[in-house]
Image (tube, rainbow, N blue to C red; front, side, top):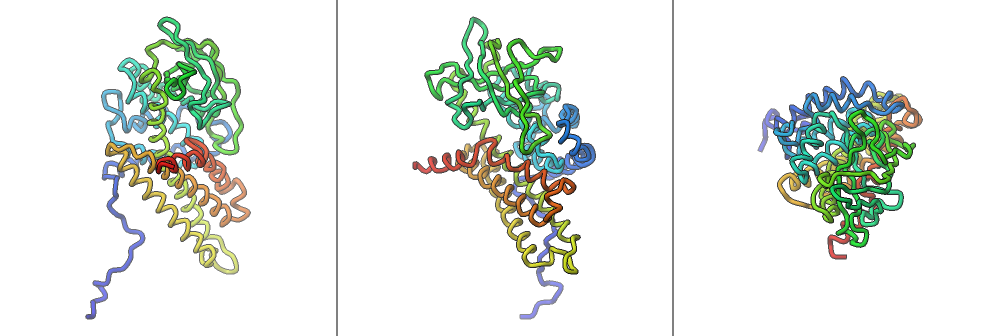
Length: 402
């Protein structure tokens, strides 16, 4: 039966669509935050690479309400759901500065959520509230020179002494470590108890005058392959005294507390990986449409066109895996296997896309002019931080009883 041409359904690749997770409110946030990033942050990306991103970025972000998106209004937050954190991570990808996104995510998505979940009212008032206001900057202290993925192998100790704990040890690869006002610190309160001897503390690193507290030192700031805009440090604790009330959660239950924290961290990392891959794809697509070779745009060659098709497919698969897992997490599930697989897959996709985008740009991609080489260097950390590929594979394999 013939059908009028006007009634024929044709694909519209540029059309909008209803989203699985995001409401109009989420999209309003995306529009406003993306605009802020492009206007006030992105123009300074090169400067941040040379001098680190300034604390004023966090202050401004807090002023606009972007830090407290998912926290209760009673503590200065906006009371939004978990999806707002995904929108924030995606918007920060427009900054063209992986280190900036990493440093901010440590504060907003790795340290403040455990304080909100596990902290006493006193801890929330002293750390969560100023953290949401951007008045205090946080870092997370897990990895040590001799222990990273093996959390049970950490050696930093916290010994009870009256109403205080005395902390000794060191941490390494600590994002925000050189600038932070306080740290969420993973310690051993019982060195002989394995996983059941780990306890978390909120430890002040600076006094009210901005000086380091007695016994705490930044041993050194570290030079890195990428993420140059974020400070990464090795920290030392020598008889640092912490009030007993600064314990976060239960004594001896820190391994389980930090394991919960890692799930949210990995999911946000996955969203950031996908968003970063999308920005690289977009920038490279624009280049392929403009760059001429043999009398036509290089994107018109089948070899290049198919590269974009492969990248687009991987990005979309990674995005949908992230969103479906986020839906489960937001709805009260604890899908460790799926979060682990999501983190593993998205970080690999981001690295594959970065590599292809360098290749499509050719010699220009290897130069700093286009920013592709920076993204290539920055994105590589995704397969190491928040759980290396090898650990992710081990968690997934063991989840099947192997």
